[in-house]
Image 1: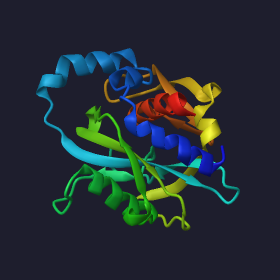
Image 2: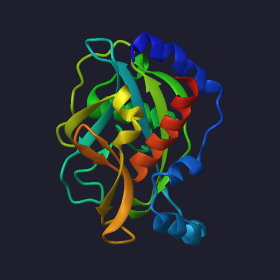
Image 3: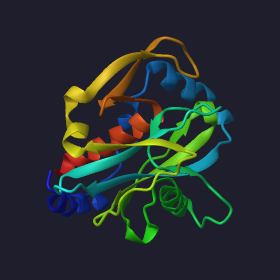
Length: 212
């Protein structure tokens, strides 16, 4: 979709109610849903903010930015996600966290992002993070600059591929709560996108379908 047209339509998202957990559950195994029901009262999570950034490529086609994280000693090693990260003491709020981390990880200046909507939080059991996503528009993108210590590669997804239901798959994966189970996911640019990122994307997709 042409980026200018996307921007005009995306502004309508501001007034839409959030689909919330119903959209998350579409990309969540039943075992995860059950685990959260049984353990929700015991959760004392850390906080994080991430940015779902839409921008035009050189042909003015709309794209969504994902990142492949580096291999490291941690639960999200070598996984696909949104730019973002944990709250730091200097952050005023979770939005500033998302903008600051997006700047640090991929070089996007916070002042050049128009934040369209705050989305529903998603809890990530293996790392004990409660993550707040935001939808942002980056109308005049500069070349992205990877944070080499954290970002293995950029995954620049066409909006049309993100919205294409044929890219919604199921794959046998091992998670923090079960091994070798069927997990709903997106297949985008050759990568399997699952877990909390897929749940956030499910909510974004439902919102976009109401305006596009």
